[in-house]
Image (cartoon, rainbow, N blue to C red):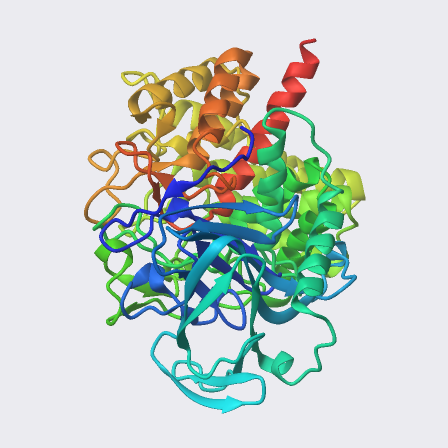
Length: 607
């Protein structure tokens, strides 16, 4: 799929711009969504997990946005400047064509491979009329209201929801009010800069055009390290840049998505806050990024996980950016939700769940770290050894599983499998780095878990492994077992499971549901869309089973579902193809990268 966006009419559904009509900009500290309608409808300050000052995505009246658009907007398109996180939105009205270039800017000369703070704490919007004459709406509306005063060069703003955050809006033309109309002719330009924190006090020696150019240069230098020339190369490169935009440069944490509460079904209650770091994302993300040369993102993420474990000791499911427990989950009573899909949630109660797969996720991170980037010291190993023993003793225990069900716990097959991963990686670490550990016992326990999965979760009637030890419904997470080296992809029972999942969890056109709610209740009402990562797992299984043509056809169809910017959501509505869930979703982009690498390797192997 070549990223070649065309002008399209701007259409709202229930007063909301579709999720797929947005682009992402980021600076390693926070990220913003910019719509094809010229509105920045999502931005949390000063970092990813802070309260949003703009969240029009969750309430078109009360959420707040920063809009620059023609009064009579007809059609638009978006594209990134080369391989960067600088986004261009071109909007056509009846009288002219305007280009808006947006970026969360970076320090001149910054090296994104160093995993250090590079953000300038400013949003730059550079506007230029390309044709005709355009009357522009410039509107800055902060969620919850704000105090304002005129200052030299612009406006000083203080949001009510963030009283300690100082905002400063400056403009190349005089702005005395946060809502105004400005008429520009072809060749005329307007610069708008929103700064916050200490940047509002710093001297800014560079012009906005220079800052945009240097920000683009920083991103392009980083993108040069991406090493991939396989299928769907442009999308794999864009996915890597997207994941880098979700990277918290200061310590290596990567958020699952920059947004909260975008629904998995329009009108449904499956609306979650994803602005945190899940341990299970770490091993998948780091492995995929390492394979395409993005070593510092992988190393930073793995290092962050191991630092958290070494200092906290608790194997939690997810953490905030500082490696601490996220705030308690709460429902926002004010916001109506995207397309009136309540509730809007802040915080995530899954942080307090029991999920035994976390043992395997952490040990897999430790193995990747030690193999590629360094050794495991004795202090960290003492923590990891406890987790290996916990996996050995608890693999049959009940938990909430990878999908974080809000029912009583169950003996999930995936959780048992990842306990096997913990034991197997523990054995590897001992043998490779001469660490102390009961290798014989761990190896025997790992083999016992594999036998139990193949025997106890096998359902002869369904001809498939199932979600539980002891039987149950189908679960698409079973497709990940070969990827974690638990069950070989070509094992007869894994081949049969692949077929069963593809047939019975099919949402049509290569899309898969995670599970069927009638067979696998999760404690929530309603249904959800098709989960993209599961379809990428299917691609991998097909490839490993030698069904390369089928795998490639499915991979291409999934890539074709990306928006014109190359961005993917968490889920897809099977009936309409529209985006659902938090956006863009790191897991979906990791799946796209990993499947591309796997296909490339299999194709080369078969030449």
